[in-house]
Structure formats: C-alpha cells, structure tokens
Length: 156
Image (cartoon, rainbow, N blue to C red; front, side, top):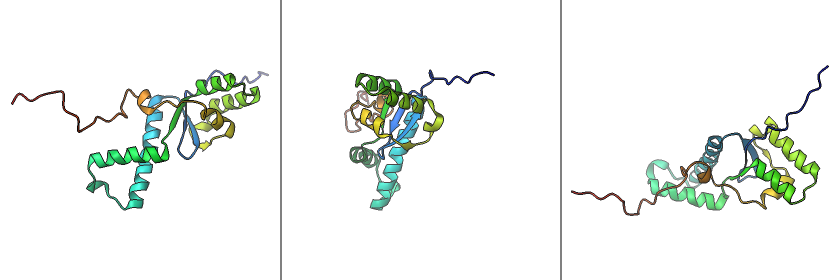
C-alpha cells in the first residue's frame, strides 16, 4: 500500500485581502488584476446606485474620480505574495503551528473562493506593505492625467 504524500511545495503565488476582509488566492497576476477590477467595479456600481447616478450621463473623468474616491473610502484590495506572508510569519517568530496552517491554507484549493480571513493571517498582513495592482500589471491601473500637456505637437 502506497502512502499518500501531501505536496507542500505548491503554494499559490498571490493572496488578496478584499475591503470586506475576505481572503482569496491566485496563481497568476492577471487573475489578481481581474479580481481587483471586479471588486472596484462592484463598489463603483453600488455607490452609483446609492447616489442614483447613471454612467451614461457621467464623463470618463467623473468615473475616474469616483474610482479614486471609492478606493480611498473602501481601501481597495490588498495584494501579497504568499511566500512573503510565510516569511514574515517566520521573521516575527510565529508559532510553527500557525505557519503550517497558513501554508496548508495557501496549498489548498479552498482559497479559489473567498473565505473570511483568519485572524492570525490578518494580523501578519497588517504588518506588511501590500503590492499594488499597478506594480503587478505593468501599469495598466495607472491613469494618464488627461489635463496634462501632450508631448506630441501638431505641426499644423
């Protein structure tokens, strides 16, 4: 009879903490970006609905300002690399039992769905600096200042 060996080398790469303190993990940065954008869009939709605003009557600048305001109020998603979480736990002298629980959680497919963030992980995340979506996605989250002068000049 063969013994089942639990694979402990696989750890999902990114952990994301939502503004509602829900935790979810992803293997790829594009999955993180899609999730964060969906959370931002849901927040924007909820806010617009509560204010009885209609997208069709808003300018792109107004919509961009709302994204900024909602991010400031809700805090947006916080992104971390799972290996950094585990390393921070070790550096802070967390009990091995908690490190193992976090590692098991990051190894499980349970985190393909949002769960309430365990307190011991949330405590560690509070001591860490999150990664921004823009850092992960080569700036797709950066907005150009539409009021800034263009670098190109018309020769007309």
